[in-house]
Length: 496
Ligand SMILES: [Zn+2]
Image (tube, rainbow, N blue to C red; front, top):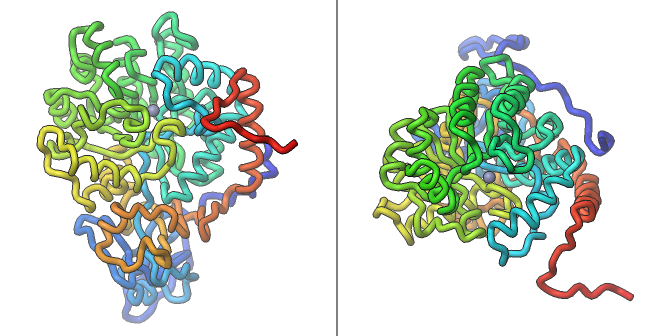
């Protein structure tokens, strides 16, 4: 639907095997030509040495980074290559949002009252709204989320699987040009709406992974199917172990929600007398393929278990504060990191965290770690918090070889921040500037897989004004179908 809103998409450009005309200067190493040089910026590489290259450049060939270095050297290696002038700017790796719902909430953002308990917000809002969702609502929601994320410098999102129409959503994310992992709804608890038998849940999961295969199965790494259970206490042991086995068999990731609030602790205590992560460990579900959304209410022993097994965690600090779930009382994400845990940041949903702003999440977690250090863990430094938003976040979601750092051979996912803004003047330390100022509003350009998807702050892949109009129209129709009127904090006074 609405294909006319969307500019046609050029084919994915290049690949490591693409042949290019070779040039052979007498005394320079021979390199295939590049397509674009991003030049003149301070390049925050997030490589192993965490180098910041002043007056640096990044050469892009097809989807990949061909060279990172001083602008003078990069120009000499690729003479005559078109340039994106980033003089005076700061270039960083694209940001990683490891828990970002793309459907459901985007069309009802700021609509749900903030004094509801979780039961009312599920049964008065989430259930009727999801029940009224049509495929087109999923499509416009996914585009809206992708556009918002890209404009905030986010180049990779993990969609945690609350998607009813995954093929539609996958196509929309691909069209927007954001890197994403994607799954679909899955639970098997009898009596819940949409619960299915284990075999059917797993078949639906497998269909998404087959449609968007991982790189090892021939996928291009842009949109990749994952096995995604809603999690919480909504999966039987058979479904949990089946999902872990399926992710192993398909060589892809597995994600589920666990313990954002204390409710899951109580549920697992009733179910097996164990903590939630202890329960997963008992069934062999923990491990490097698993990304847990949240893991706020974990015991010290469970934190050790998660770290030992290489299980990754996506922490969405704004969501826990927005929903009052207890991060400052119970959250052990920094101790988990200090124990060698694979930690990433997420922005969750449009009524739980609300903004797809990973730098804001980094700033909040760093600040809370200074103010309320659970277990006395050493607070997060800005450089560490920015790593969670980039290279460490990418490693946590299993994409560490692909994205999260500006290193030759990795995917060309990068952000150009303009610095002609008070948030950047004067520029002190790059890490502290990026985290404590969270200058998301200064994102000027974004490349994903070498594709220029944000130019001068606007997304190039989608007609933005058309998308806003479409989203407003779909949101009004969705609320009408769900039979919901937005409760107002203040009376609206309409013109007579
Ligand atoms: Zn979630």
